[in-house]
Image 1: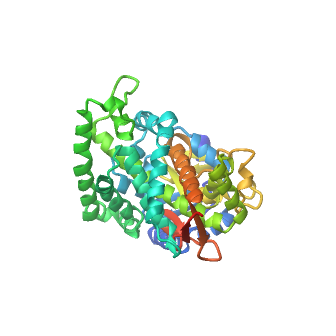
Image 2 (image 1 turned 90 degrees about the vertical axis):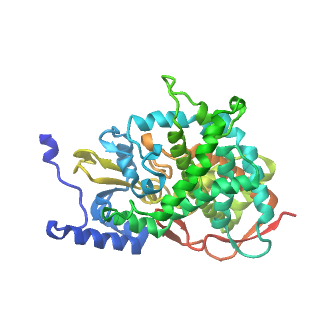
Image 3 (image 1 turned 60 degrees about the vertical axis):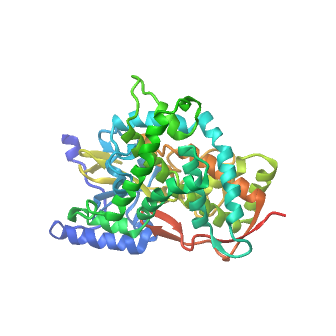
Length: 445
């Protein structure tokens, strides 16, 4: 520890001890108002690691370099805590979610959740995704503007309810999805931002609309879990709920009803909003880049996925739905040659890393071709985070996006309403198109 104590702290914004709280509040307001543009200016000024206090988050070290991101993601999970880094999202997912657990509990739950989202199970969901997309198209307005983001949210909710619960009756899909939709709406509202900032005043403990959504989820999900456990044909079913009920750990342990409920909330929310936002961004970029649109449509009609995958990877690079991911230092830690104090929240700034000029030529331009010959670099492209906390549903999200894009472009013709691409705006903890990506649609000729 002697060597560590001799290290200096990273450069950062001033925060005199006497006025620390006032500066933290001022910096929080500046971020809420200035968003990622202001943060990017600060990163350019202070370098690849900088510090600042932020009201509700405490002392924050912002990392914007792939090499430093690698250090963060590769750090032992008992030193840099991933569950503690979740921050405001934990207020929506709930304290029992796998998402907010530390090791070794996180890894135990993650292993049990992995099979339903990969391999053969993943391929089995494709017909469900295709049918949901075709059904959505039948309800979309023709030859008049609508917001793709709102339409994508409804579509992705329909998909995830069917995939997770194995239901296809429209009324049952709506019944099961409705409380999750209300909970999700709270998660992308400024109400979450304000309540989390003031949580020491009890604003998270007393939150009637969230409590009601959780109760409604319990009322819908817990009886369904009991019903499925008693189903003699459970072994024949391939939906996520059935796979979780049948899942066994290394020592034969199973998930309890409560753990299944908690992890279903995680999968429903994490697998919905980010994918819907990415689809809206992909349409915004494709409709303003006709050659890229033409090549994706060719794959949709004739087969192949290489260029479509490159489009999604590039969309996630320039328009990631989440601006950052985080860890919390459990004890003093050395990062990039600097001393990071215990309790500091280390934020990996996804946008800054994804748009690094040291990694990418013309980093702010939409160029899917850059990912045709090689996959994205592990620590220079981090829309799904990294390390032990990397997004568990990344493979599912990619398969869903490819499938939905191909169905939409095969069966519909879309045009942009606005002449320029949308501006990025912050919606609580998400980055969304300012107007939701306004499009016009008509059935393909």
